[in-house]
Amino acid sequence: MTDGTATDDSARTDADNFDGRQLNGEPSTRHDARTTGAPGAATVKTESRTAPGKLWGVGLGPGDPELVTVKAARVIAEADVIAFHSARHGRSISKGIAAPYMRPGQLEEHLVYPVTTETTDHPGGYQGAIDEFYEQAAQRLAGHLAAGRSVALLAAGDPLFYSSYMHMHRRLADRFEAEIIPGITSVSAASAALGTPLVEGEQVLTILPGTMPVDELTRRLRDTEAAAIMKLGRTYPGVRQALSDSGRLADAYYVERASSTRQRVLRAADVADADVPYFSITLVPGPTPTTPLPRTESAVRQAESTNQPPLIAEDTNPRAAEYDQPGQVVVVGLGPGAPEWTTTEVHEALADATDLVGYTTYLNRVPSRPGQRRHASDNRVESERAAMALDLARRGARVAVVSSGDPGVFAMAAAVLEEAADPQWRDVPVRVLPGLTAASAVASRVGAPLGHDYAMISLSDRLKPWEVVAQRLSAVAAADMAIAVYNPASSQRTWQVGAMRDLLLEHRKPDTPVVLGRDVGGPTESVRVVPLGELDPAEVDMRTLLIIGASTTTAMDTDQGVRVYTSRRYARTGDAASPGA
Image (cartoon, rainbow, N blue to C red; front, side, top):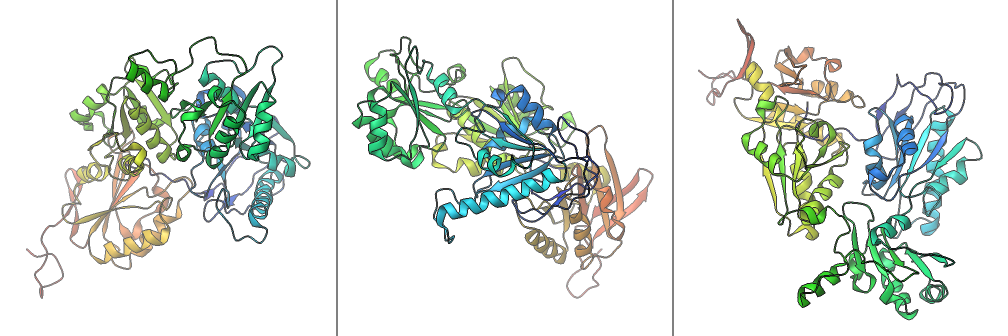
């Protein structure tokens, strides 16, 4: 049982009973696959197979999950293994796009680039480090394919258009069946955002990487009717120079994160060099625009100073104009399960919101309201979800970020505030509304096991190493405090409960009461009290919250069942160690 979205997202999986299969093929025989260690490290043990698996290069489109094709969505849902890339920060844009179509229990291969733009001490330099990474990544995917598992390798945009997928295709397609699912490219999305044709008639469109030398880029811009310049970011000063030298700067437009909720459109001449992310593109349309373009920020400022209607929009997201100013983000807690545990204050914030953002399971607990937009996502993309909420608010939306339990307890409040610390969100107000936390709900079912000092600890090692978890458990146990344990286990993470029990038994007696509260407030609620020495990890899952008693915790049988309380009285110094009277 968990207050929020701090669920398990490590590369560690347990697939002993996984029913492997390959798309468009015969089911394969049983297999055993385990991935261990930090994200990106994997070892695979395989048994005999009837046929190798199939590699899918899945084009996801430019960013909006609704632009994923029907076929891509089906393959993502059915694939045995979902593979995706990210930089060393671990956040994968591709996985964020695909998350609505993934199913629980899928194996994941997180392919983490060793370098992106930074330097490296690899003996082969940058290219040597990247080539070695691609070889190792191909070996990992080959292990799954050889074992009969289908692999969906995610690619933003189109898999064969400036994509990392092609490096895996070159290394695997000669040994395994491979199929490409094309996706909408960023060029198409940027053109749609601009709202004007790129080419018409016999005009030529040239697609250019911004990494080209300025002189070469200038020459090619002079020789073409229309152009799309990709791979921006740190290359933008050179791109702007080439646009100026070729006489195309006045007709060029800049589109950032096309189709996403963070989309921006500006005139290329007005873009600050420091503000250009990699996922942006510059367009030089061939035909002269015959309709008003979406307004750019510069046109808005000019219109405000001249009292003239602007020609180009600050934001190409049509929803932006529908929001009342000012925007804000309110992070709310629904409580752990029962509808009556949601506070009146939270109900009012939900009713006032123009947009709801949250993990799909939690959003489903909020009644739908006409005109209110719901932005559901996977439970493992907290940073991306926070950025989406802040961006919507910056554009004028009243956003409610939805958590279960209390949003400040292992939930979305910390994720939103951490993202809000970025200077780009400094003008976005953020409020946090409390909710009934799962620990309080479980405690109330048996009495008052948290009646004295206690600690809250998450057993998940997704965001912190197990060594830190174990150190904190030992410290709290030695301090003789009761412990509320969140996120104790998941389908992919089961061993920590047994390890916790053994560690606590070094400080607590075997008959110490342990409360197991599962789905408290929900339709399948169950609450049991067992001795610490008899705690069975098999009875604990992600919907369970544990309360471990202290030396002053007592369990007693009553006509209403077992009641548990932790005394607030301790013996005076020099008296017996038992609680004082």
